[in-house]
Length: 357
Image (cartoon, rainbow, N blue to C red; front, side, top):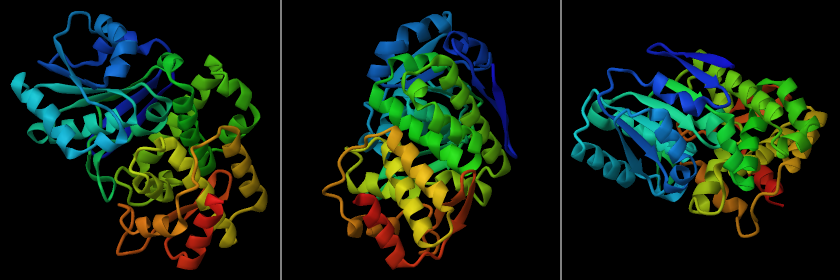
């Protein structure tokens, strides 16, 4: 049972990876929690709700359904869920459980961070992307029309419970989208993880339980290590944004309706590597290997009607833009990255154009 501590100035908690862990969820809910509110979606509950109910072992709880989808991850959804909590008598002794993919863990965590100025949250991610990234680190938030996660808060969970067994029901496209986040982690921090993704792609895509659990555990270890070093993205944690700056622009430009988050990150990684090539800061073999490994886990949806002009214009409203300067995480070699904040506009445009080609 791999378990990794996330240590922040205000909280120390575990991210636990274990097959069958869903059945043990009641053990991790504090006895002091008078009411438990499970934020989920209808499709997740249809697949895993019965198992969750059994795991609660008679513990009083309420199920709050979020309609789902990146386009609905808005303040209005948080308000609607909070109203349901008020009607059920939720107070500061209540607890929220985010049970779903990255959208649910983001939104459920934000709901917990704001309800009565903050109540505890437990994250139980059910997609690969949420298990290796979104559920860990305390980033919560919702979208605005102008950009992704522009309204949010840092709110660390009590614990993150990761059960790889729930991935058996995950649609193929969702599974592949999560693998792009695993690739990201390999590029920024672990050549060994990247090599596994490159060399064992057929086993991973076939969802070999042992290999999948291993790459999840290694990615969780990396995320826990980085968050512990830099909770609020002041320095080290920024490397986790590899592929996200341009990926977020792609999501916003297409109305959060065409691309899964991991697919947008895959495009963002390609564009970031193209920029690194133009800036002569990446090893040529590393650039080739990153492109090739991303292709192994494709395809992503069509990019034919997206223009470099529109994506570059979107970059200015990204939440990681500081004083008008866009910050890019660029690879130097596998496992090593650098932050570049002064990339010439013409090279950024050329990199995005090349990625769209």
